[in-house]
Image (cartoon, rainbow, N blue to C red; front, side, top):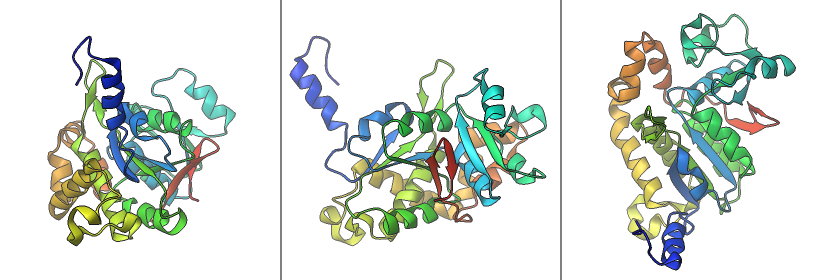
Length: 271
């Protein structure tokens, strides 16, 4: 950090260090997403509890998801204009930011899904990066395989762990999103993206920022007891306490979905 009154040149240099420019696989937390999007070919939004898990469940059912700003009063008009169903509050009894509600719906077509973190990030990143993907634990491997098979070897991937917010609006890093981001990054490594080789030490991970490598290590540590980790983390405990344990169970369905979710024309859909 720079002290007040420090040399502006030093300030610019310090900020540039946060861009993770030497790396093709980068990771940052939601509010600071812009720091790593310079030159990015794909931005990956990870909001495990629950936006990106909802997206994967909806796409599994053949639906499309239109992300929308949280609690915007124009959401009803937006949904009507696009011929879509509007997801409401979790306690409203219908479609909501609850994967279980999307799975249980009698029919599912186009869904407008407001979210305070994942949806807002998707809007922001769509204006900055050519492609935006929604990744959860359910479709992490499928998305990583799509990236390795579709994008150039030197494509820059900006992975954004959404996190949550404290009451004052500041970031609350959410371990479930770090785990989800790590699952996707581990999938990239397994698919050979960037030539990652854990046995080659520093030279084998030149394409992955230390932030990305750290998220991968968090996932690998959590994987053997993934469901317990999601149940025990702050966000999971909050959902379970409110009666939404089923949402946590769905979020823990590691690699159960092959639905790659790409944002195009304002909606997440399969490529």
